[in-house]
Length: 228
Ligand code: CA
Image 1 (cartoon, protein in one colour):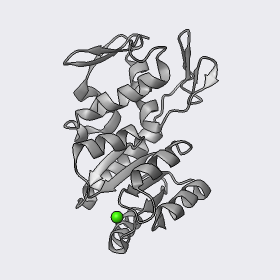
Image 2 (tube, helix red, strand yellow; image 1 turned 180 degrees about the vertical axis):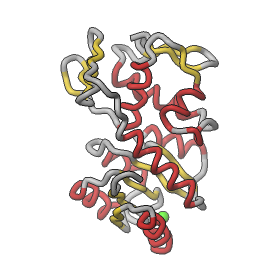
Image 3 (cartoon, rainbow, N blue to C red; image 1 turned 90 degrees about the vertical axis):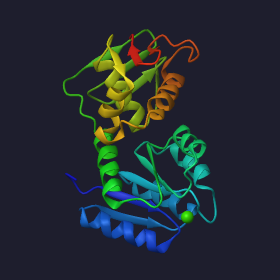
Image 4 (tube, helix red, strand yellow; image 1 turned 120 degrees about the vertical axis):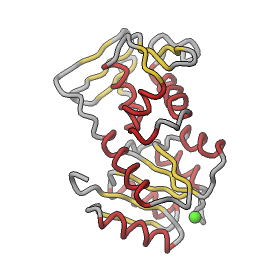
């Protein structure tokens, strides 16, 4: 990883915390650790980590609830690490604002690849001083700010990366595979539920009427096209 990324681990199982700490420190990350939701909430707010690794089975608050709480104000990547592997639980976490989801037991190499991918997204470089504007939406690609109906709009790093990908490919059909490869990385082409979930979230934020999208159009069975 290019710079020393500050990563917060919220996990109640000490052996897993230790394993993660060793792996991350070996890859030049600065590691912060919380063993319950209460500590995690405080540390996320006070230390401004570059990324959060969050376990769902925490002793004091369910990880899904903590995820919703911190997602309100923490816009950087959150990766879920959980023994829960049901699709409904994964979709719920993505809906609640997680950037990614890894089930336990996990391979350290895969976790590191996902962390790199999430951090890369978080730092999407759009180059140039580009301003994208429609009647209701304004995206300043240089300042990385988005306004909707004149008001500042908060997007998570994944939502922002997805929006930038659409803007850069305005008018073109992007397949699910292309979106997965560009936004999440080459290792993600099988996560076909990700574009659907994240496009749904983005539509809720940038469409006049999310049920009748005018900006992000569905190309049935293929992918999406940004009409802009
Ligand atoms: Ca746990």
